[in-house]
Image 1 (tube, rainbow, N blue to C red):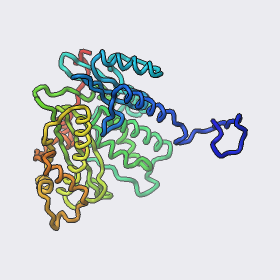
Image 2 (image 1 turned 135 degrees about the vertical axis):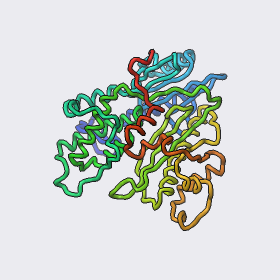
Image 3 (image 1 turned 90 degrees about the vertical axis):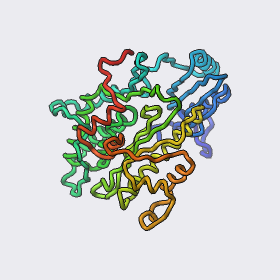
Image 4 (image 1 turned 90 degrees about the horizontal axis):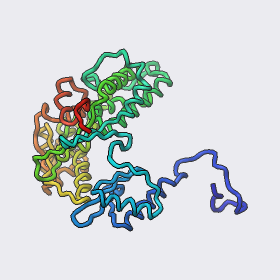
Length: 398
């Protein structure tokens, strides 16, 4: 590497770099700056909600490019895409072109043109899980749910109960791989993986066995993927959200769990299972906090879509199964039961009053976000996952 400025040395000297440190390697950042600069000069505009999403309008057509480090996904009509490729090459970029979208960010994309649907799977990751943990789970029975129903993880209070460092390292690796799986293709694993992630530094043998149970379930359902099939009956672009909470679900901290799933044209685009930041004093307050988290994500998606010229039908419907939370969201009042609630959560009321959000009641059994807050029974699990997961075996004409 070059001699740092201010260091006394001969101009022809250089230093031998023995170890890279965070922030020293700037190649990815410089690539991004160069790419964005070139894209802007040929007519692309950054999305204000996400600078890694750019779009270019020409007459009535739009060309969209999504950037993930140096992997770029381009969506548009073929002539415009070919023109973009030519312009990038003219500006010095060396490109590897893949025609049809079949694999992106380690996700396999299976298209069924007859049914106008797509399935997203992560077979590479599941194969890695099987290679690493296959021998430990091969004799386990076939499970019908990702996690043991009503099972909650408690951190060990005694060091003697914790597993050794070798198993702890395997535990961290396994949970990390499962976390990446929930990110793109397996929303049904969100809650159990969130539970497992509570013990990344100190797990018990019971917790380790629960992780193996999840891995066994994933391997047995490796052909299951996220179904992308827009609802043709809908005339306008619409967002629909299901939201739920598990009040005081953590037996140690008594912190509640937020869970929600967002559908765009009946396609799941965002989901979350997350512990809340503080203790709530009632189930209505826990649900109110959960709705506020969902509304923040809704606003991001709303502005992201506006940036590429898509108008969303308002109000956006948020469904919850708690009457008290609905009342709090629709009535900007303060009383003995709500005066202690953090003001940031009243962000919901502002969006309700502006007509952007509408909170509606849904029965608990019809609430798709139910599986994001607790480990449920087989009946409840199968009822909800059919809305966003599908088995790819023998059904897709790619």
